[in-house]
Length: 151
Image 1 (cartoon, rainbow, N blue to C red):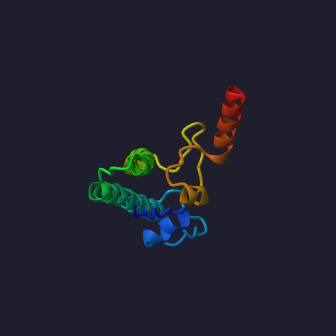
Image 2 (image 1 turned 120 degrees about the vertical axis):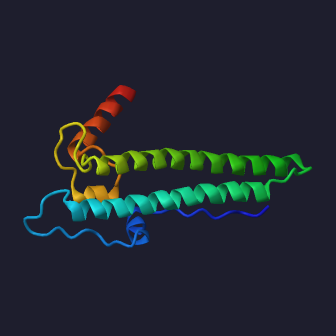
Image 3 (image 1 turned 90 degrees about the vertical axis):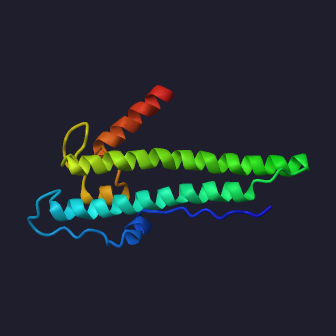
């Protein structure tokens, strides 16, 4: 059975894939100005395109590679491989939804601000995680609360 290579993409390669370099903040520049929002729009659209492309590749791959193996072990191996691929694609589907929500925030000029305390999230944090909706302090508090609830 042929193994399929999956490419994981880091936030830095997302920047290069989008054809952008890390944003250089200019002195006295207003937060989330037109240049910054355009920067993040490029990143988000490139990321969404890449994820969507992976979904189509997976669908094509599964159609081409689907074989009814007579050997139960081969059949189980293929089913497990397909199951893993589908779980990964489900995570990516959820990420695409987050990207779409974030793109809508950009349109509505609500991007880049913490949903909890309404302060600036920060350019560097957003470049690392463009779909971030909490500042680092609120995210840390949320993780501490989650740990306390789950034990």
